Length: 277
Ligand SMILES: Nc1ncnc2c1ncn2[C@@H]1O[C@H](COP(=O)(O)OP(=O)(O)OP(=O)(O)O)[C@@H](O)[C@H]1O
Image 1: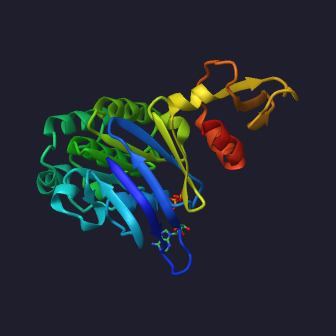
Image 2: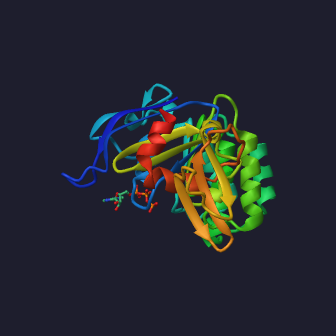
Image 3: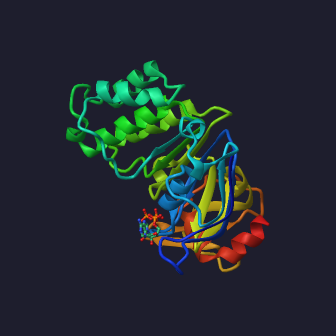
């Protein structure tokens, strides 16, 4: 559904952010895009949504070239940006002027999402709190019913109950023909939601695996003491013991810890690559 081939892009001449970056994403999945600050997550999301253009290579979404920004492309893709700039209108006016760009916009669902998120209906959008604005845009994005939904740090600013509502709503809207990409540092907010992990580092994609494959090949556990005989790919030690990632040699079943996985991939890339190849 999303096909990025040999993408090269730089903001400044001679300092490429992406170099021959390749990534293929399929419908029916929720992808978590992880990377250090400045790795290029937001930039990649802008390339996918046609807001930035490649210097070389191609970015195609359902067969359309993203940078051409054809109406048939724009009506089927939605980006929830990290920073929100909303016009000085109320929800009703916003809806009247924007929903028409999305042919599959579901007005009934939009009203239900607003209610679920407890968003004030009669306030000017810029006067809402940051979290309320975020929940409003998420509600609009979900109701737009596009085949591709891209979200940049969507849980930033959401209170604790709203985060679980967010997870419930996202899980409820995913269908076999849709692809959701979420860039985040708040991996714990998205536990149980993301089914595939994409890690970007050093100009390219260095890891792209389904959660199921990760837990088949790696084991995540907390141990009171490190065993020198055990291969530890990454350990996070604190007063309660050591949270470790090891190769899953005995077909143990463990729950993925995305933070540990991320640190393991970044600090022990070669060993992780050997395990997955
Ligand atoms: N408009 C711009 N002009 C010049 N450089 C930019 C611009 N936007 C981003 N950059 C640079 O590109 C790099 C990637 O930025 P980007 O925002 O894509 O990273 P990110 O992975 O989303 O980071 P974060 O996790 O901090 O949000 C950074 O070094 C940033 O300084």
